[in-house]
Image (cartoon, rainbow, N blue to C red):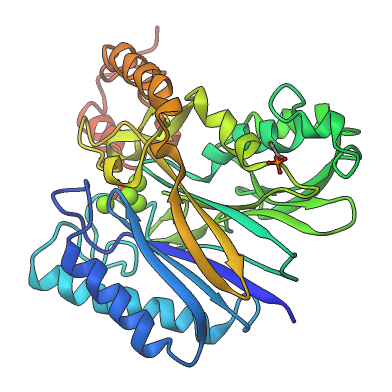
Amino acid sequence: SKITLSVIKADVGGFVGHGSVHPKMLEKAEEMLKEKGKDLLVDCFVTNVGDDINLIMTHKEGINSEKIHTLAWDTFLSCTEVAKSLKMYGAGQDLLSDAFSGNMKGMGPGIAEMEFEERPSEPIVIFMADKTEPGAWNLPLYKIFADPFNTIGLVIDPKMHSGFRFEVFDLIKDKKVTFACPEELYDLLIFLGASNRYVVKSIYTKEGEIAAVSSTQKMNQMAGRYVGKDDPVLIVRCQSGLPAVGEVLEPFANPHLVAGWMRGSHYGPLMPVSQKQALPTRFDGPPRVIAMGFQLANGKLHGPQDLFADVAFDMARQKALKVADYIRQMGPFEPHRLPLDEMEYTTLPGVMEKLKGRFEQC
Ligand code: 13P
Ligand code: 13P
Ligand code: MG
Ligand code: MG
Ligand code: MG
Ligand code: MG
């Protein structure tokens, strides 16, 4: 019988500011899943990356299950109550339109789910990021599933040699398209390179087996702005015809620039860190990614292994810090600051209004 792995995340209050989650909120999340999910879940694990709570759940309900989504929603509501009682910053910010904290983009919880037949051994890596958006997975997913300089398995593993299919969402037009790789690599890349708009939702083997799924979702127009795009998660199945765990982690050894730092309005390097180091404070960042490894056994989550705790990622962290220092010097200038139409909030209309009449023909 099939098992479903659901990772559902939300920021329902930051401690301190946007840096982390208060331990009492994490306790509440665990208590909720253990009690209310008693007859529903096979297993669960609660963690956080920065100010985002991540609920990792296995069950038999399939994807898009109302029961599972309601459990997650109720859990976030209970955590919001705790956040409110402690006056945490932006309590309930990803759930309610009346809890505005200047961060309208991330008001819907992020969801990544996959249903599959558990293999004789089922190694899984769950990536969770803070201060960035789902487009951050485009470059690593391309490397993991399409670049032989990253994934030697594409060349030497007979089970991987035929490649993978990438399902890509157009977040502006609400359309999706699937590319077969390596045949359509160059077509794929013209879209993936524009990661603020075209985002990988899922990846399948040529046989149709699910390999990866991200929390990318259709954006909703809420309060005049698009929301539901930030601080993403990504599930990747590994080994035996899929990329090895080390191939899945390898792209993060070279931190790439992603959108979402400070006020959701700056580019910065995505720094791979241990869960304990997932505490973005410098200029509310730089953006962080953690990788939790699990072995699934009849739906039980054996783990996590905190994969980026490996000292082999120390150099990546050093490099990310150097890049952070460099790009911070640009202050309010692009390309550190996002283009005007992509910032999470802006003073431009107000400034324009004030200067109305002062613009002359040149
Ligand atoms: P093992 O021979 O230890 O299974 O390793 C295979 C592998 O995936 C190494 O990357
Ligand atoms: P979060 O989406 O993590 O709350 O980030 C808010 C922000 O941009 C802090 O500078
Ligand atoms: Mg926050
Ligand atoms: Mg957020
Ligand atoms: Mg966050
Ligand atoms: Mg944000």
